[in-house]
Length: 320
Image (tube, rainbow, N blue to C red):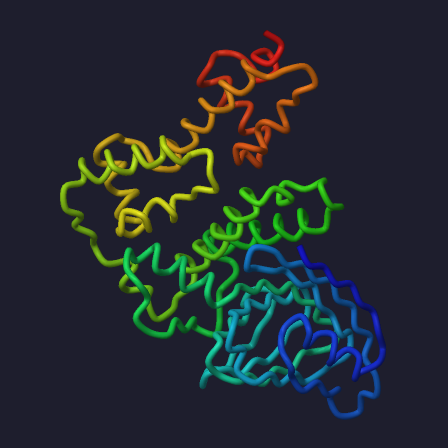
C-alpha cells in the first residue's frame, strides 16, 4: 500500500506532489488569490486509490489526458466547474465529476471545496468491464462526465469508497485490506459497481438480455472450478473470465439452476474450508486469523453465516 500525507502553502510544491499522485498538471490560484492551503491524504492499493484533497482557496486545475487511469471527484462541500470531453459539469456534493483517460480537463474549484477522489487504473477498469461483458473490450470506455450521487446505487458505491478510505487509513496490519485476497476483492467490487452504476459507452451492452447456452453445464463447470480453487484469490469475476462468459450470465445461470448465486456458493466452500481448518487447528490458533486467511473481511457476517451453516459459533468449533 502506498500512502502520502501533505500540507503546504507553496503552490509549486502542491503542483509537484499532487502531480506525483495523479499526473502532471497546471495549478493556478484564481485571480486575486495569492496563496493556497493544500491538505492531501492519499492511499493506494490493488489498482485503485482514494485521495482526500483540499486547496481551501479557489484554484484552476488543468491536467492533460490522464492516459492511465479514471477519476471520480466528489466534493464534500462547495463545488467545482469541470469541463471534460466536450461536457461541462457543475460539480457539487450531489454531482460528482468523472474523468476518462482520453481527454484533457479544465477544472475550477471554488474556495472551501474539499474533495474525496476515487481513481482506478485503466487496466483494472478494462479488465472488470471485460468480465462483466464476457468478452474483451473492443473500444475506449468513456464515462459520462457528471455522476448523480443521490441515487441508491451511487450512495451504495460511495459507502464502499468511504469504507475503503477508512480501512486504508488504519496502521499496517490493522486493516481488513492488509490481506491481499480481501484487498483485491474490494478493489474489483468498487470498479465493477461503478461500471454498473454510472453510464458509459458500454452501458447498453451490459443491460442487453443474455441467452447463455446450456446453463446447467455452465453451472456445473463453475461449481467444479470453485471447489478446486476456493482457497485462492478467487472472485466471481475470475470464475466468469475462466468460463468465458459475463458475470451477469454466470449469475443468471446460478439463479436459474440453483436458486442461488456464485458468490453464495463460493462463500459456502470457504466456510467449509474454515470449518475444517478450525477443527484441525492447534494451540494458539485464532478464529480471526483463519477467517481472514480464507477471504472473510466482515467478521460479524462471517460468524453469522458460520453459525447458520454449522449450528455453532466458530470459536466453539475451535475449542473442540
